[in-house]
Amino acid sequence: MKTGRGILGILLFVTTGVTGCGVACPAVGYITTITVTVEGDATAVDEVQLCSDQGCSQRLPAEEPAVPIQTVAPEPSATVSPPRVPHAAFFSSRKDANTWEFSVSQSGNPTRVTVRALASDRTVLAEQQNDLVWTKADGYSPCSGPTTTPPITLKLPSSILR
Image (cartoon, rainbow, N blue to C red):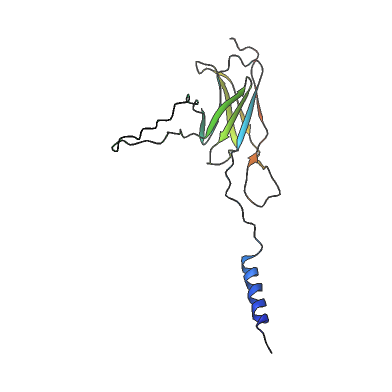
């Protein structure tokens, strides 16, 4: 007497064989950064700029001062615009006197960049090109994820006048 277990076993095998034992990768956002350390007296440096064939960096917008929340609804005819976020290949922020961090945009990781130290009058104090080598932060994961590149060191000439 047949109970149908053979057909069920075949369907289970075919279904498992078709879908496989694939890995479901989560849709998680991550930020890829490039760190630039200025070597030397950075007191004359107002900004460090990072450029690639995708464009140059922009400073992150300054944080707005806290504004009390309004409890009154806007007029029905009023339109509320979303905040404007500038488009740039990289966004920079100064971490300390000699360190800048650049967030890489979603357009991909560059393989070659130019780094510039700029004075407040936009004079170039130092400039160099760097080739970047990217590696996955978790080399064993089959999913895409954050990548890293070694920090860049930009050496300032000792003749910079303040």
